[in-house]
Structure formats: C-alpha cells, structure tokens
Amino acid sequence: MRKIKITVARKVCHQDLIDRYENPLENPCDMTEGQTFIADGWKKPDGLCESAWESMSPFVMALAYGAENLYDGWMKNPRSALISCNDGFRPVSFLIEVID
Image (cartoon, rainbow, N blue to C red; front, side, top):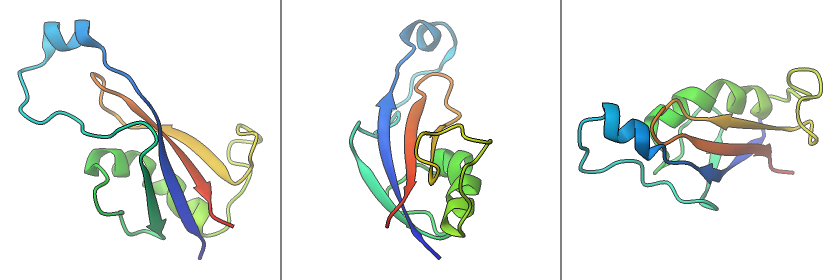
C-alpha cells in the first residue's frame, strides 16, 4: 500500500454566505494553505479535519491501493486528485498524491 501526501492547496471564505446563514462559530476551519499530511492507507492523519477526511478518503484509499487516472484523465498527474471538503462556507481544496 502506498503512502499519500495531502496538501492544503486553497482555502476560500464566502463571507457573504457566512453573514447570511451561519451561526457564529468559536473555532472555524484552521487549515492553512501549504499545510501537509501523510496518510497511511485508510487511517486519517492526525490534525486533518474529520469532515474533509470524509470527502477525500475514498480517493486516498483508491490511490493508496494503486488506482491511477481517476475519471479518465482528469488530473495531469494520473496518481493524484484534487478534492474539496464539503464546507459550503469555507471550502478547502486538497491535493492528494501518491508518494513515490
């Protein structure tokens, strides 16, 4: 099984949606661009948001077990994926790639 590097590629904040719909939060997302994690198969890396992990874990598992070219050539690197968490207020995009 391959190890997978997970990198926070982009973090966006939709302040207009937060102002309109969200109740105040004490600790919103604390991911930072450039932050990295290493996944060893199905185990969620320490410090990675649970909600983000739920969004990306099927892709991490597929790549860890040798899948390539997901969605027929979607990514330039066939051993990678770009997945966003499901937070509609502060979506975070993660680059998931096999470590050689």
